[in-house]
Image (cartoon, rainbow, N blue to C red):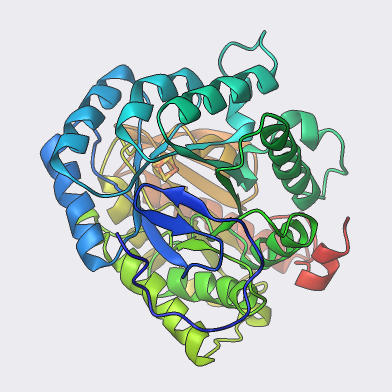
Length: 407
Ligand code: SF4
């Protein structure tokens, strides 16, 4: 599959070329737009249909979540039915990589998740296993560092309010190990739900490892149009500096509209190429902020998408109140990735878990959650009016330059 996106001739960082199936990222190649399936991986027909739909819209790579041997078996069937460049998203169970590698072109692992299984083994041994597996099956790797699941060993090394340095250190540490192992067919991503942090941490990484291709994205950007605006505000700041080799726009949309992620990604690249910049990074500061995940096969109740929209409706009246609400689709990432919001919701099969900061308030049915959320919102607004401003970081929102300086 060719790199088909419209591209600028802006100078690009001198990243090395990394092949993912028939597409190449880095090495001066056009930036590749990618997305992820939201269908259940075990539903082969629905997943193949979504893969093909994304490819038809312009996806150069399509990611699929695999958490079990059943998902891995489904992936073998999916591979038979599509020629798309497939990436697999591993979570806790890194050993599933051996079952899926024959059927995919890239494996994404999260350094923070390597601690969850086989805790007695050093993480470096697990990376060696992934490298051996990827090498044996002609796969690339992505070191996917995420704000909600940072390597706990790195977390301990830095101040409690410095979330970017542990992310950066984790990525750099994994790159160094991969290099020592002689495996150079990898890229890195450093994602956060705050566009300013995405800009800051990726600029810092690119300055330290300009040779490593970067996959850019704002995680849990939320619903369009706000989710697209947040993503564009961050990515344009990076693309204009020659940073970024592949992008994903993570939007909370119904499964059937997943191709909107690709259309949005292509538009962001086209705008950057034409010099049309949103320049909105400084404006994304302090007001009402709803972060919600783009959903994937781990969603246990599709009512999650509707719930995210209902939360948006419910909070419209809040206007510019400096409140962050996180709405997550599953128990895998939901608990960790709601910790930094004022109020967090993460969805299970029949109930929605509500949190205030990192404090769990209980689980409520899908019908009971909105009135309960309303109560908490009223309490929060009152406490903020009383002078208790609290942001996701426990202080005033930082700007990019102050984040850049925390090295
Ligand atoms: S929070 Fe869960 S459902 Fe949402 S994208 Fe992340 S892993 Fe998938």
